[in-house]
View 1: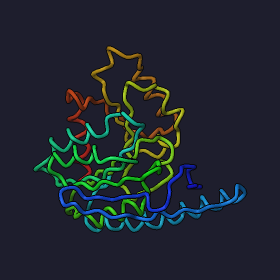
View 2 (view 1 turned 90 degrees about the horizontal axis):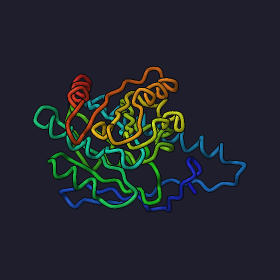
View 3 (view 1 turned 135 degrees about the horizontal axis):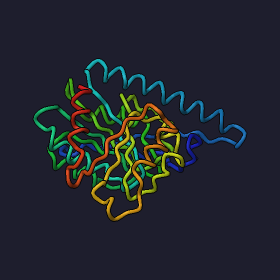
View 4 (view 1 turned 45 degrees about the horizontal axis):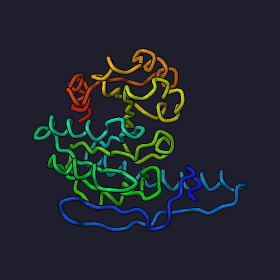
Length: 250
């Protein structure tokens, strides 16, 4: 039992693979088995160790002027489609690389690989989030360029990824209009940890019952510093503002 978040993640269940080179390896995840009375103590130990590795990752990014962005959302928000369109727009202008996080399959990594950027897949098994050590191990299997963007697509989950610092420059939370506009109130820790919120699939607004203004209001109740972009990765609406923000980070 992973006491830091309540998910089950057997040892040696994490697999990290760099696409295009058939390079793979297993990373034994750290697990702490405890009695209920020690859950808080164990959680602090797990998060403390994670924060130490995250600081190491952050130093690595800083030395090489790599802007690492942690993309977080519930499943089906459109993270991978946003990444595909972003890469196509910025390819040749800004060096980019991607770390893909999923419990199983390499489907999303294969989609990113087709865009021509360096991508490493991290399969977490039963784990419901990436942690700093998984990112550290993935970095050993890729060579992100200096002055580049590194996108970390986290496992679809609005709970556990909020607790785990990966060494990123910012968390970008994505919500689609096919979800409820009350997500920021139901999952406040994630929206509080984020610096930017992408409201995706706005092309579907005529067909769904979603109030964008109310969603933004709820999110700002949780985090008054949050910035927003309303986009459609399918049609391209709103994407120029998102791309301009990315350019400004380099």
